[in-house]
Amino acid sequence: MMNYKRYKRIPVVQFPERQWPNKQIEKAPIWCSVDLRDGNQALIEPMVVEEKVEFFNLLVKLGFKEIEVGFPSASQIEYDFLRQLVDRKLIPDDVTVQVLVQCREHLLKRTFEALEGVKNAIIHIYNSTSSLQRDVVFHMDREEIKEIAVSGARLVKEYAKDFPGKITLEYSPESFTGTELDFALEICTAVQEVWQPTPDNKIIFNLPSTVEMTTPNVYADRIEWMNRNFKDRDSIILSVHPHNDRGSGVASAELAILAGAERVEGTLFGNGERTGNVDIINIAYNMFSQGIDPNLNLENINEIIEVYERCCKIQVHVRHPYAGKLVFTAFSGSHQDAINKGLKAMHERKSPVWEIPYLPIDPSDIGRKYEPIVRINSQSGKGGVAFIMETYFGYKLPKGMHKEFADIIQVMSEKKGEIAPEQIMEAFKINYLDKKEPLHFRKCKFEDLSDSDNSFDTMVTVLYTNHGVQKTFESTGNGPIDGVLKGLQKELGISIKVLDYSEHALGEGAHAQAAAYVHLMDNTTGKTVFGVGQSSNITRASIRAIFSALNRLNEE
Image 1 (cartoon, rainbow, N blue to C red):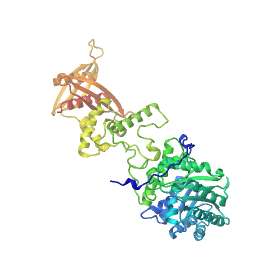
Image 2: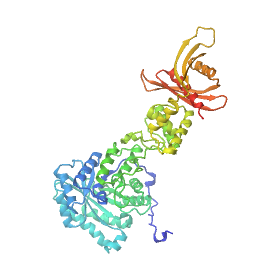
Image 3: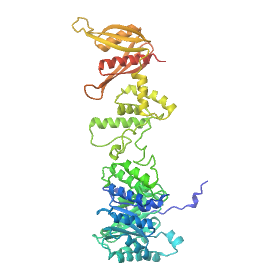
Image 4: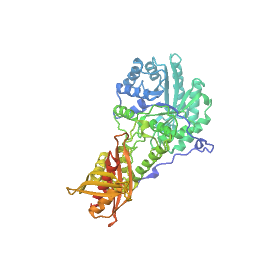
């Protein structure tokens, strides 16, 4: 048995004046990608310089204005990468690069050397502040931990005064989620007093969920408490850096925005230590699905995935929100039917608003296609098969025919597994369009008898084969179809009834084919079947549908 008693609950925040539950996200935050630092350090095979350059260019193309490019004082490859960006003039004027550095003088000196020629930079300093790390890692009290942060801020300020570009200071009380709120505020305020930010030259306070320790609402409470207790709040950019240890990184980030966060640090698809950083792509598409501009260029998810997978050597999961190969795929029959009906309703109503069951966004808005939305297997239903026939091939099956054809496909899928659209169409041809035995319609001729006093005003002459033997019959009716039906009943000695009939064009223009559907009942046995015919002439399509149905009535 799992020994759950080894673990203790993380205390909640006693904060009855919280306001974030009544708020809504109104706009996108400032996005900061940390793929090239936090994400890269979590890769089994970290990116080489050229891969980092390619990834940086992708982030710029996507519209990121703040990009953490690494830890240039930590290794030569990190240093060289930043120099490549500068020397090759790859940093646009409106993009700020962010570098991480520990609060040590020799590391800061190396960092500023790497930044030479950069116009806008964020120097990100941090130290761990949690009660656990103070106790078991650093063996320091609050004042000693605070002095690390304060001395780091002083060093950055000293180096920044002679730097020709603009420097913004970012401070993170690492392991914020395990730090007492009063101490987190105290240490941030101490850094603030050293840096002396103003509304025109703000400081970034980044409050990370370094390890996600409890539910997202507690993180939101902590963020709002800090947000409401900072001094000179208009001189601060409140940033969050959620991780995903409990699988709720996206929720933590979204609730933190409600609680006052203006900036989010994260990675594409959530790559990062342990279970990962917060997934910026996920949050951005969530906003997009609510009619909010995410301020990122995410129209082509396939291109983003291609670069990400190649540079990171990590596959995007097939069920990953928005990006996975199967997320716009419906296997369930009821889902398929609802999608089909929703698309029809939106088209008929000419609605400018996307509202489709089970599809929170239009796949085409992010560069995906409709083809993979509905796939057919043994769990699929009649709606999905009908959707495939109409969407892929233009056949608008009568509602009563949905189950009949779906039953055929289900038998196939139980034997073969998933059935591709082309296989569904082939089954449609075999069972309906090409159902020409034992009765095969060959040709017909019609003569209008409307001047006759007789109530029947059309004579039909039909040439057909029965088990390969050529035969002909003549009959009259109140139209070509009625004449054919009467003639066939007399010729074959059968009693049949048309229960339903429908037709439509396959395509547009003068040369478009027509499809006809006939629902027949054998009056003797009560058996009912559908038949389908196709021709450039609607009358011939209807006659072929009758013959198709008769052949299906003869099946065991």
